[in-house]
Image 1: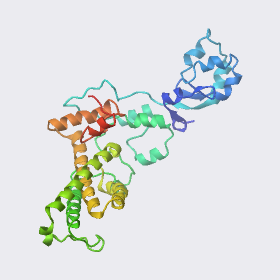
Image 2: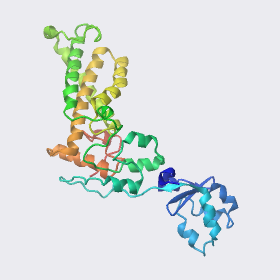
Image 3: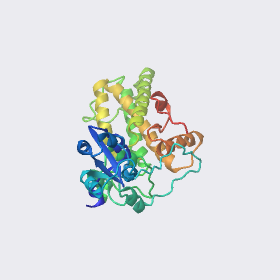
Image 4: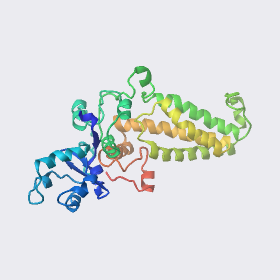
Length: 335
């Protein structure tokens, strides 16, 4: 049986099964479900349950604990359900951020041989689809930082890869004009009716003098609300990609913008969406910068904070543009 045909478990998977109703143990890197064997163990189930959820290699070899015959070692293979994956962590609570930190490139061949997780030399999507590892092992490995000179391929064929990556400057080129358009559409709609976008998308800029101060104020308030809403979405969704390609963002924003139009009058919804889109652009560009460039003071601090999320504790520090929601939701990460 090949290594990849075994299901790969994390040590925490084994540790979670330590009762008479579900008893797992490990030995020599393999995982065994011996629940059904408990009533038949010659030494009684108590001695087995003492080591439930743990490695039993030393206990089986200890004749003072309970002597095992050669056949016992052969019998246990009948209960093998998989093997233990690597428990090596790059993420470390003692990691300290420095101004000149730059990750070393991952040796992808050695990394794959060691962890049997994802081969970064091959397209990722099919590997994840056909994966044979537990959820806990996946979560441990997916949060270990791996650095390669070029982005790993998602699908494989170049005609599909074009939808999964983009240059950082493409994001503002596409989405800033859209955000600006929606801002002015909102302002116009506060003072006059406009034809539906599908009927006539053009804005009547010849009548821009009709937009009152009150209309601008309303639009700006909606715009700021959109800023706030985006920071919440950023907090929740920031792990999706480093720089989110326009096609992917267009797909993800669709249900949220439809919801905005359902919840609010169209003028209000357009103002909110324009503010959210602007902050999406800031998020994507800032996220890219945090990983790539020399930065001013505030951004250097946010870079340390963001790298702490990757290298110190991936369950804390989700904010990219600010730490505000981490403080609110008690996921602030000291670095």
